Structure formats: C-alpha cells, structure tokens
Length: 187
Image 1 (tube, rainbow, N blue to C red):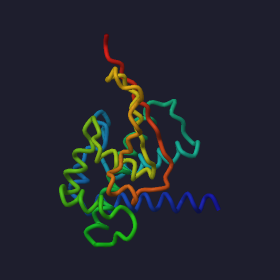
Image 2 (image 1 turned 180 degrees about the vertical axis):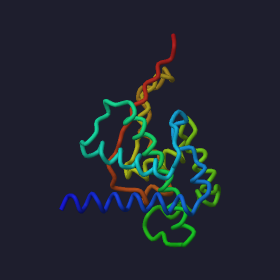
Image 3 (image 1 turned 60 degrees about the vertical axis):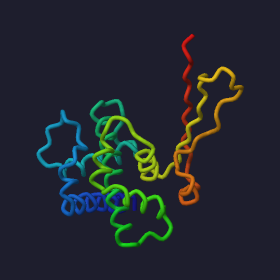
C-alpha cells in the first residue's frame, strides 16, 4: 500500500514538473538551481530535487549532507514556483472557489508570473513572497517583535501576521510558525 502511495506522489510531482516546463518558457529559463551546479536537463533536475525533499521528509536521507540541504532549499523554491503557476492558471480560468481568490487576483493583476518568480529568487523575501511561501507550505507565519528600539515602550509590539488583513479569512486554520525578533539599540 505504501509503495502505491509513494509511486502516485512521484508520478504527480513528475507530471506537474513536466507540464509546467513544457507550457512556460520562463519556467525553463528560471534559475531555481544553484549556479555552482552543472545541470544538463533542468526538468530532470527539478524532479530529482522534489524526490530529495520527499526522501528527507520520510527519513530516507538526512540533512548531514550539505548537498541534500542545498537541494531541499532548491526544491522548496521549485514548489513555490509550481504553486505560482498553478494559482495563475486557476485565476485566469476563474476556477478559484475557496482558496485566496482576492489575494491572487490582486497579485496577478499587478504582476505576471514571470515577474513574481524572478523576484522570488532574490536574496531577501518581501511580504508578498513570504505569503506565497507560507501558502505553498500551508502554514501561517507570525513575527513577534521584541525589539528594544523604543526605550519608552513598556511592552513589545503585538504579533504581526504576514497575511494581508483583507485576505486573512481566506487563509485560516493552518499550523503557525512563530519567529521572535530581538534587536537591541546600541548604547
């Protein structure tokens, strides 16, 4: 039974990558791969990246190997890329019934998928890219700002959720990943 499930998941990942690469030139040109990696076929490498991530999640491989860690980071970027393309297709077809229709309609109204994906591979993530990442991984991210920037402030700032307020009802009931921010003001 487990073998059947694994082979179905592998087939779905394989199909999603092949379909996306065949339909979108900008995906084939995308640099989701570490520049130090010599890759002859990006499509096959993308499938292998997703397989590495699956193996890590199921205890077949471990993060002790630096290459596995790098491949997993590339796989997460690839998952976000695939999610952006999927959301764009659903938005264009008017098929969003429940999942974030306002957020994605506004996102694709302001930028095309190529621009979004190109910005995704910059070193720092902005709020939109963080939302795409958290939506892909199906988590919520909170930032608790405990900085000491204001000496008169007695309490830290309230938690900041990285989901636009008008779409907050669309992205609910997910595991919450909380980050604490501590910055001290130099004396």
